Length: 404
Ligand SMILES: *Cc1c(COP(=O)(O)O)cnc(C)c1O
Image 1 (tube, rainbow, N blue to C red):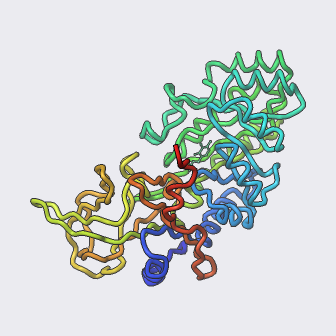
Image 2: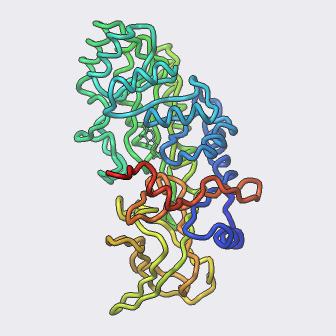
Image 3: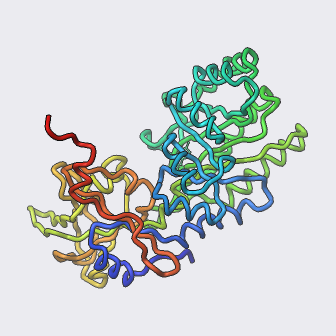
């Protein structure tokens, strides 16, 4: 059984650090990483944690300590990764629609780079020719995950170089002497169906022949984790088996070895995260019972942004009689976390915990309504460590100029 934090400890943390508060469980992150390593044993695979899911420097340092690499989505994340102690060869920079200046900066830092437009590929080739290997992000025209907002590989998506432009890529390579070492795809988030990855591999295998210097196929991230009680995540063992089979087949058939990279974000940190809130108000309106918590879309926007489901638990009254609630926030917007959710009786002052809050939770938080961003706590070897303080009024005023 994977490790989870018990109600008793979550209650203690809420009492000690006050609410709302994000809590992460280090050992669970390690277990998730080990699950990948075990499944992919015997395959030539490297994993790069997609830092954008959760970038607290202590989390980055922990990811480094367990031997995982890191994937960055902005130059600032690259700089944070270096600050956390990652060496450039273990840092990957996969971005979209960024300026060429930023790509040059990443090149100067010596990290792996995936480029996602022909115009930037051409500029890179003109500037550096064969001297610095790069990856190309291909848009494989695959619809993944069923949710357009989190799908990135379909035919209308802004991400990557469209597959049908591959000849143009080859022209740029020929003209500039560019060294293409990696082909990259990332089709979206929450890809449960292993076939989507298989299809991605198929698409890439079709074009590998055009890139004689290719060494790496980067299949991106997007492993699904279960959010609802009976939901299943991506079958990692099955995925590993398929990947091994496909790449073994390719190697035998074409006498060519390719290394496989993955960029899991959610898979590593989602289930390690808990968001604890406190109920300010219970309100009855018609047939609806509202539980209003001391947080809102300013702290956890996934339910409102993507319609994401987060399991909620009443850790103050777990044995209470079940009733149906709409769990809502305190922001001056409609910020509904959950509708008609059956939960043990909620009383004002109770702590409600949102599960799966490790990925894209704190990271997407804002100061909307001039509320403070919550603190972050990392539980490691049983001990709760504060890894980010709650905002203070000074944080709201920071960077604002006076005297105009
Ligand atoms: C966001 C992102 C990931 C991580 O996605 P998850 O769904 O969190 O696994 C990986 N690669 C790229 C390029 C991304 O943009």
